[in-house]
Amino acid sequence: MSRYGLLIAGSVMLVLGGATKASAQGPSCDRACLRTMLDQYLTAVIKHDPAAAPLVVGFRQTENAINVRPGNGMWKTMTALGKVQRRYLDPVSGQAAYYGTIEEGSSTAVVTIRVRVENKQLTEAEWYVARADDPGLNGPRQPGRPPANLHNPEYLAQNPPPERVIASDKRSDRAALVRIVNSYFDAITSHDGSVALTHPGCGRVENGTPAPAGRFLPPIAPANPPAGSGGPPATNDCVSGLEKFNGQMVVARRIPLADEEAQVVLAYAVFIRRPGSPTPRNVFSEWFVIDEAKIRTVYTAMFYPPPELAVPNWPPYDGNWPLPATIVPAPKE
Image (cartoon, rainbow, N blue to C red; front, side, top):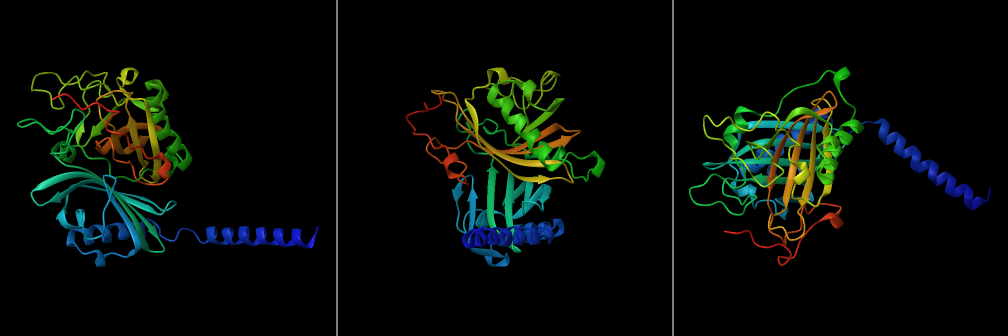
């Protein structure tokens, strides 16, 4: 081998050796560390004090895909954690997340809050926030009507996600958890519920509301059926109505967090509608509760962006999906 070849080979060995050494040292922030960092961040936001959290220079935060400077946005409006508080942790990716409710004065929002920890500092925070007066599938909330976006923190408080540790011999491994979640998105894209690895009768809770019958169709049943109406049919589940779902594709998929102990996975995606449809895009944070290698329940915090907004506004940026307003007709009044 030439001297140049030996130098290259030696450099490769050095890089690989360094990587192996770093891997052997384990994650820089374990589950306890991640929980502490997440709680420190949440406390700082409630105190309206960015200096109370270890934010790196250039710390990046978005709220429903809009960049927010520390001290603005939720740093000004959040006043307390809500009744539903779930924390999920992923030492492999160095990320932690909160799902549940938070208080903004007298108002309650349903949220997903993801943070990234690097070298015991916070580098990212990504918020998906659902408030009672936000627009929904059929446009803005109408006077005297329930929330258009299915905002229902009361139901969520009565039916929260599990807080659990699954026995190690009952867990799916990390790679399997990711595949199971992707099967769900593949089912939506292909309009074929049989593709998804789900339990019969799997539940779906959107912004706190149990999804009504045929949820992937335009709504054909009220989110809160009147007493005595019987509610959604027993055959309704988290993949009902996919064959007629008004969606072209599921894009910008990301799975940043898999809590192997809890068997709960956080995923993000954007539903792109069929060309010419007046139905707005959905931008989702989705929490998948997995049992026996199948999806048991899906909990969401989601929003409906205006056509021109680039979502999700996180890398890879070529997966962002702004649409000119002229492409999507305005919803009918």
